[in-house]
Length: 114
Image (cartoon, rainbow, N blue to C red; front, side, top):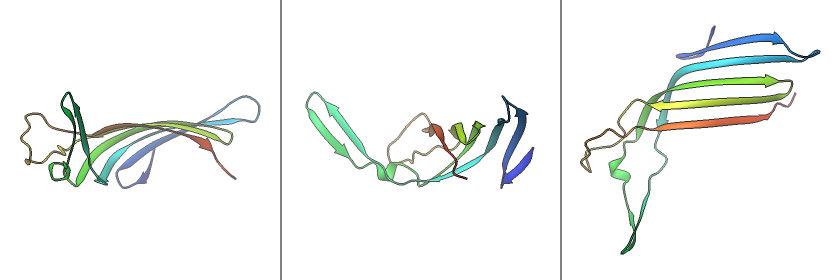
């Protein structure tokens, strides 16, 4: 294991693949911090549609925890990442009984240029 940044822990393992190919597996766990880029709400109903300004109802900052794993095969890479929001991003502008938390799944795939 090594520390790849503040609070991020990663594990990298190497094993021989077919021929001279080396496959590298990695796992990442660490904190995430986010800033609101924008908000919008568009409601469709039987009486028509309406746009609402919900910007005051959503907090500007969010903190969470990320889990990721990936593979490299020659120049190609693939990574799957899940982010779990730990803070309630809803303000008291609109009363709510349940907490509102962000969750996301990201998939990255590509080719490394050497």
